[in-house]
Length: 114
Image 1 (cartoon, rainbow, N blue to C red):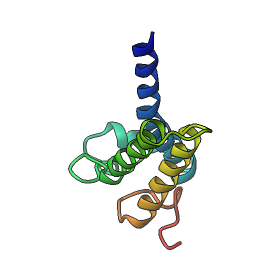
Image 2 (image 1 turned 90 degrees about the vertical axis):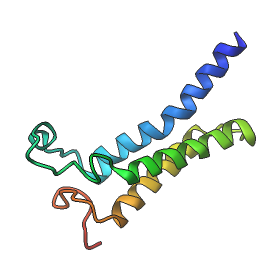
Image 3 (image 1 turned 135 degrees about the vertical axis):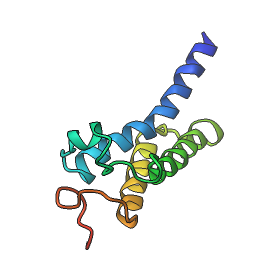
């Protein structure tokens, strides 16, 4: 039973940053607007980023996962690391998105000039 609980805790640590990135990207960055045809069509490269990889999302995830892991296993917090890791990863993702020059449809998302 201890191994199963450790497994569930590790799954939680790894999925907190993913959930934060997905929710922040959809609700804050893109403001509930995705161009579905651009995602499905191969000609339109709006969501292609850097050779098919959105590098700042990977950076946000890795830093958020390390943050969650640290405050779950290495230096556990009395309140837990879930909310703190979620907020940290979300803020990091918004910050990196705002600083990057990626081809995000800024008319519906974060203002490029802000």
